[in-house]
Image (cartoon, rainbow, N blue to C red; front, top):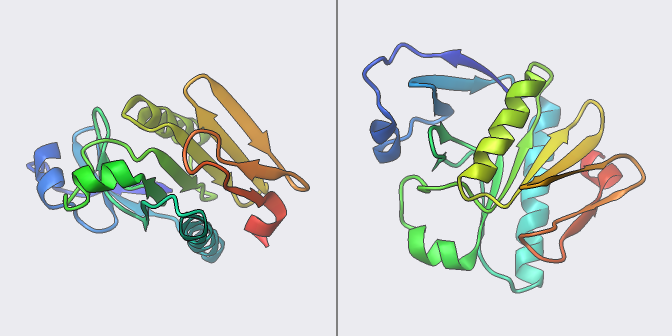
Length: 179
């Protein structure tokens, strides 16, 4: 998603942790507005969130699924498009304004205006801050990349993408996700 810097020079990461503004991230010492969302982006975000919710209910794994929810990485304040919080972390941090680490499972829906290098760096940032699995969803190319600590897996049309570390047993056909 393209970001626009907002004139809030005196807004710190601690301020973000206390009161995160809607639709904003705290990146490199500045508040930046997330924009560039398309109808397709929003549809895929909702669809994936609903799939994860349905799965945690049917599998009785518990936890919670969120969209556009704030978390802190080692150096930034982020808001992943879709995020899953395990029952253990929910019990520990469920009442927090901002999760003080990355979510274990995150999906970022890549918009046409995103810069590839920044998307991959953001995924690495999540993984270095407590995240275990990051899905990068590319609607225009109908591609899902699953990033893990030491591995990147790619899934295209005709294939099924599955969780590997978190939300054990969840899978979805790539074509279904983009339908």
